[in-house]
View (cartoon, rainbow, N blue to C red):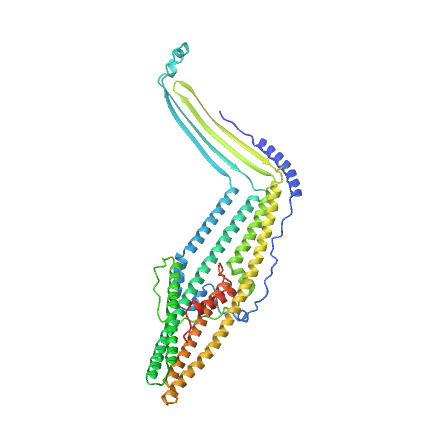
Amino acid sequence: MTMHIRNDTIHRLLQRLTLGSAVLALAACASAPPLSPSSARITAPQRLDAPAANEASEGNLDRWWTLWKDPYLDALVDRALASNADVRVAEAHVRAARALVSVAESALYPSIAASGAAWVNAGDTDIDTALGSVLQPYTSGKTGTGYLIGLGAQWEPDIFGGRHADVDTAHALAESTASLADGVRLVVIGDVVENYQQWAGLQRRLALLGESIAVARRLTDYASARQRTGQATAMDVAKAQGALASLEASRPPIMSLIDARQRRLAVLAGDLPEQLPKMPTGLQIAVPPPPSGQFPSTILGRRPDVRARMLIVEARAARLKSLQADLMPRFGISFMGQNGQIGLSGLPGFGGSLGLVSVKASVPIFTGGLLRGRIAAGNAELAAALAAQDRAMLNALEEVETAYGFRAGLDQRLSGLDHARDLSENRAELAASFYKAGRVPLGDVLQARLDALSDLDRMEQARIAQGTATVQLYRAVAGGWGAGASPIAMSGADSSQQHDSSGSSPQ
């Protein structure tokens, strides 16, 4: 048995469906709510206020951490990018989002399925009736076989672009997820560089503290010897002993901070905190200058958080287009073909083929406000995405300007401390010269040396803060972003940490 479908019949059916759907589509378009605007309010300024940002550019910032010119630091960053847990999580999210693009694209193509079945049976019946005697020759010891195979296909042409808009939505969301992953990588890089340069600075402070403790012990011994000869009082000795005890009490906090930085570097590299990485010794890290040749439009286009927000706006706009398309007619084409055969030994067989093609169309007439409500929600989501994009742009510009200002302020502080150190070093040299000439006692020489070491320690604290500010600045300009305080908030936190948690300055 075979069924044939005439092409002219299908053609006339399609013509009628198209004419009726066009009338319904015009009615749906007339009742569709308007789309929200998809452009941001914020326009980037022509230039930044920071003078350093407007100087001539000095190179590419894609691998800005290499400006520290430390091969060991470069190796730590590469290891963290390869093994950090947060980076691996972000990369997995990117793979999942890109897989969903394929899911959305599948709606643009026909779906085809095949089916089949086969069977065989054997029978041996014994019917104790007059009918049984008639059927006995055909049923006793007879076998039967059969099969049925089929092929089906369905396709919904995307005439009004709704499914293509869904693909655009999935693409934009996948790229937004990729931008967020870029942000995670740059946050991890910034954490590695920040902890590494702080570790090196704390090591230098620990070495200076050791020198200060040695000088303070000599001063205590000198005061005790003068007391025994009647040239100093018990109060002089107690003062020297108190200064020594204060310096010795500063060592444990600095050592614990050094261990904390090493543990953090281990975790950033994907290791256990107990597996402290082997660190180089005698480091003298040179903090690079602020990035120059930076324009607001370039920075905003490079920052992952701003890029992610822009892509979310694209996704919301495409989603709104898809919701609008739901008001339009939808068409579908289906095909089914089957072939089968049934056979029984001793009886005539039966088999044949069957084909069926159907064309359908539907248009929403009454949905109780469902579609219009979805479109209104889509408009609101697009407006929220635009506001979030404006906020991200404003926060990015504020962060960059503040980071430049924070770095400039620390540069000035370091310059002042460098001048103070020169003065204290000169005073220590003068005291040593006067002591050799017999004009001042040894106690004055030792105290001048302690003062010079104290000024050196304050400079190291300022260098640590300058390095931290530089990491924040390069991360802000080059695209690093994420959880944590802004440079304004961090300036106060870093300052208190330097003076309280990192140990007291040698006095």
